[in-house]
Image (cartoon, rainbow, N blue to C red; front, side, top):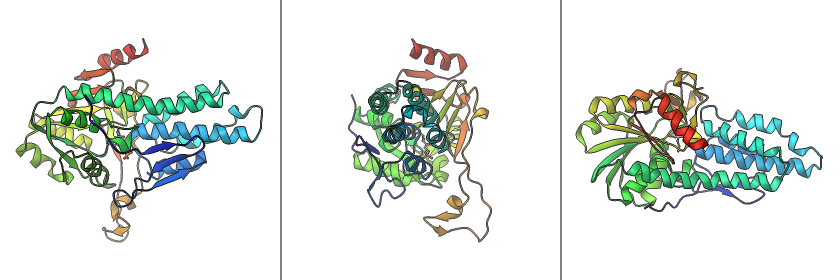
Length: 346
Ligand code: MRU
């Protein structure tokens, strides 16, 4: 059983891409239109669209736009002229492995020199992500007890994916099944994905949510009926270490201390067996002004130094379950992740 979701971040129109501008939500709901791959890459860097699966899907459509433009130039070898665009896209954000997965898949398809096939592949990547989310939602929901509360971090919903969401997909399914009574959403400084996006998405879909500042997590986990912390991932390593939004690691440590279960929900496109452990993951650092200002208003002293790593790594031993569209990896470790991915290859 799945519940509905009403938001779509990415809309493809055959010769243009529309992205719901996540920088201005929830105040303004506006789609921006893109016809050039380079502009789409800039939109990823600037966080018009964000969330690992959504970044991958967006990059796939950007490559279709690049191929269409190259073909319009009329060169016989148009499919070999996209290296600059592919490289520019690959530099848009470094941590979310779905970006590189999508670029590799599209690059392979380019060899066929068939623009329709390329477009169909991008559409399939988009549709497969939605399907994976509804499937993993049900797998994850089976682990949630009745009448409980859960805690989530960042935004992992329809806005961050092809639809339905990863951690929010599990939450949607579990809510529909009557297991979840309440969701606590951490606000997720500095970009406030929890406050601006998760609270908005859940409220639109009538799922009861309370927004909390990140510092409230410990108190909540001690006092409230929270059974699981459920988060998404930007990259899952061969050994089960997980890169996700900064603050995820803190939550996993708190969960261990309080005996609360910790779930990571992500499609297999987020599992990167080539990255062996968390220390091999490139962690994106963004500008200090994201920390020293709030909505363009300065909140720190003039010239205050700040650091802004936007992801952290949660070690596998703090994770109870990684759930994908293939099922659950309990107590993740190298052999379990390996066999989960081998089943996929068969
Ligand atoms: O910086 P963001 O907003 O792109 O970070 C997003 C996250 O960390 C999400 O948890 C992750 O990408 C999974 S989204 C389904």
